Length: 441
View 1 (cartoon, rainbow, N blue to C red):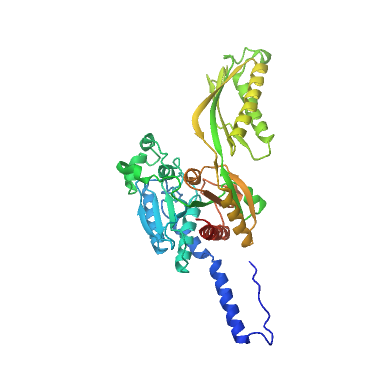
View 2 (view 1 turned 135 degrees about the horizontal axis):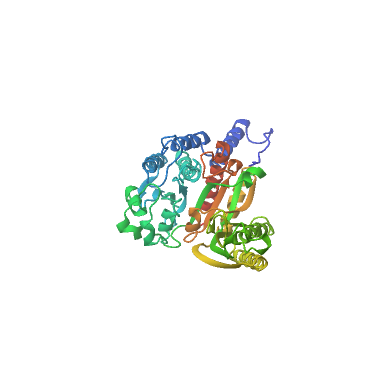
């Protein structure tokens, strides 16, 4: 950011007074654009990573585990050091609050999660949670007051289908409490372990409009920012997804006695279908994705031509119309393959569906402006992974920013984002929060 100065010439104010005014101006400018303590933020991330390692020293802080409990206790201590009043809601979400100066304004919230997938990485979720705490601590130490009340949110069990944020927006189904995760606890038991209360679960839900806005910082978990050497990803939205089971039926027959040209090989048709899915995704603008991730051939014997094959199909995009259009093209390709190979094909749409969640366009612009003001490069992009933001967008204007993931690796122990990249993201989070505080009522 550049500031105008004035010449200290004879005939102007005395030199000593001019210098004092200039010093005061620079101090005020510095207060207007504070920066987080990058070294401290990195240290807290490294310390959090020590909680929840398994016997082999691998990261394994799964929700509801002993490591999760220890990590949460550490995070709550950090929140108190940042001047936040801390409590746990009925869903086990950790909530740190800070009052605002103007009565009647709704809170600005920011945060993420600290739980991980089994043998996951130390940055997914943790970067956003600890950056939000560092932002609050920076405000506290610099005695910077905000008009709006502030909330720092550390959500419960994000990796287990967004449990905490889904509860906060009133969308967690009662059946979800019976699901067992890798710790052996049900979600309901796990929430009780974290200090939540499943008997008062409804009290965790927030009404739509109860927050002024929500912000989440996260590692990209992909390679786009890293490959393009961009500092900040301005997230336009989180993709929706739909799943299908696709079944090709041919005729099982003896693999040794049936000539190649007389076969009705369901697996061969399925293989051509997998290639067609890839081609249809590539035929678009390069940002759509479609995936076959599971395949089951029957009867599954090496000396029998497969008579039936069931595959999964997943399509993701920010637009439900695009998902529908891509599915129609893939279905047409499948039917052509079936007709050419003497097989039949059918599609079963599964219940696993997530609607696209768009971030607020005004917040996108503020994130982009803050990155530019600090001299950071940025890119508008979508999130192909799910995040707590997609739930929070149901009750508040929501924004999200990404920082690069080295080589695009995530959900693995070698997941990594540099301290410098994290600090840039945290500074943009801080600046965007202050812009929201000044501009929104």
